[in-house]
Image (cartoon, rainbow, N blue to C red; front, side, top):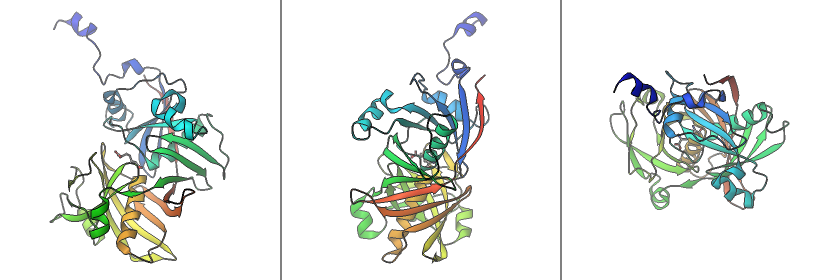
Length: 317
Ligand SMILES: N[C@@H](CCC[C@H](N)C(=O)O)C(=O)O
């Protein structure tokens, strides 16, 4: 290739030069960080490679994922939701840091709503609620004094028969753990596999630079949570769990909201009758709250609460 060909060559799929001038924000929820982009006209089409380039921590803005705020009516998946939920005006288009799509992001929902407010796209006084669209269905968010509380909807076992019969449905191995551990796979809209460890030393010894092996793996891959229940497990009616997570499409993250919900589901299932409905889940980036309650349609729902922070805004050069 001579110099003139090099100059006129088509841009690589991950080239972000064509996005020059695009405004973005950077935010996080308990250290789970995101690049946020407002797309009120639905005009922005981002390839998986461009998302990965923007989330790159050395050559891009850096983030565990990217969130595009787009009106639901401008996306086919959003239009489907609007029939039953006409108030779900905004849609959270969530991508993992490698550019792949995920159905849901619990920390992302809080940061998304905080971003909509900061951008002046919605007005949400404390105590009031907002309904948004996601690929995992509509979510209702209440603004609280400490952040946001999100009705994440119902949870489900991914392998129902196995889980209810044996309290575990797969084996997980990871570097630093001498033997494979039993685990339980839970859907929060997106897939999770929860592994209980006996003590904090084991949690610290677990290496998450490479993805843990899960056998059998849920059909669409999985996020893997390593959890240590506190001793005593319950204090003042609230259970406490410490967790580290390896996220599908990302790697180890500082926090995972849907993972915290799945961890509470699994530990409560293992603890049996009398286990509490309120949980604190400690993660490397902070702590989130998880509560179980019966939803309006009679199914058990999970509420996730925690903070949301916008740390910067900028323009792509
Ligand atoms: N960190 C998120 C989950 C993001 C999606 C996940 N990596 C997946 O692929 O399902 C959360 O806070 O829930």
